[in-house]
Image 1 (cartoon, rainbow, N blue to C red):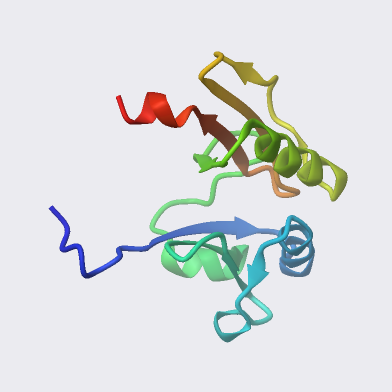
Image 2 (image 1 turned 60 degrees about the horizontal axis):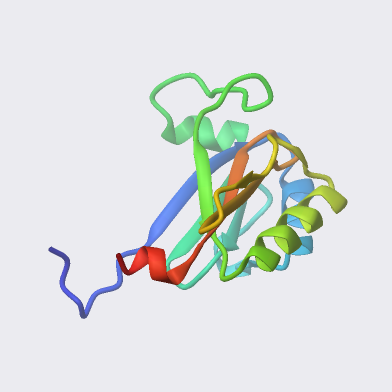
Amino acid sequence: MADNAYQQMVFINLATKDIDGAKKFYSELGYEINAQFSDENTASVVISDAIVIMLLAESKFAEFASKPIADPAVSNEALICLSAESREKVDELCDRALAVGGSHAKDPQDYGQMYGRSFQDPDGHHFEVMWMDPAMVQG
């Protein structure tokens, strides 16, 4: 069990073909680009206090990877799921992603107490955005 005094963070590293385009896309979704950890080959996208997406130019990503880089336009390397505080927030984020250069990933899923939609960023990385009724989460 983790020590409650320490907040563990998650850094999701994704390869991108276009750093400037990726920065623009995530900025237009409303996320901050942390300039301290960004340069011409890297974009640090702050999702929350505990979650950061590190977008790396493919050549930079290859320096860290031990296997070939997957092409997210033709295969899934991961499904990244973000929570949302309401059904409306799910729709807002997904609609905004589609409006600023993202693409449709799959049809919405509505289970009553759970609702989700998805999109792909311009590189093809698959994002799920999910709302769950708080009463369901509490058991």
